[in-house]
Image (cartoon, rainbow, N blue to C red; front, top):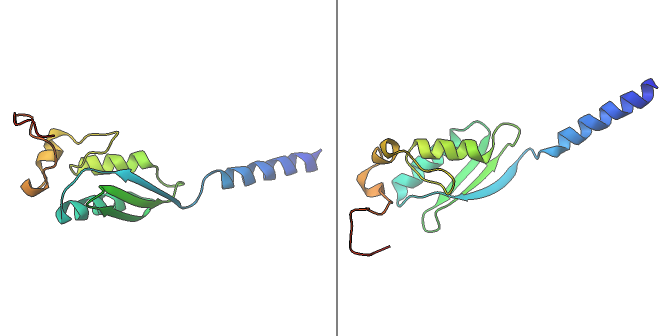
Length: 118
């Protein structure tokens, strides 16, 4: 009986160990415009414990990440990004955070602009 319990416990720990990948690659869309945005976005992402790699592509607005799923998850990264003023699809930066970015980094459409450009 003890052997059966021991085998079940070891099997459970083996399954739990392999349930999460140590390093997971993922991408997400992050709003921004320029090299200053790139630096800010990558620094914010890399500041999250468990993020091992972060590279933001300016033309596509795609942030490529490698994260340790045992230490972080995509929502923690998105929370760090909005804290420095950059929107993601799921989360939007507060007005205060967005207004703290350099004027050339402003990526949101001006709602007072009636020119019809989108």
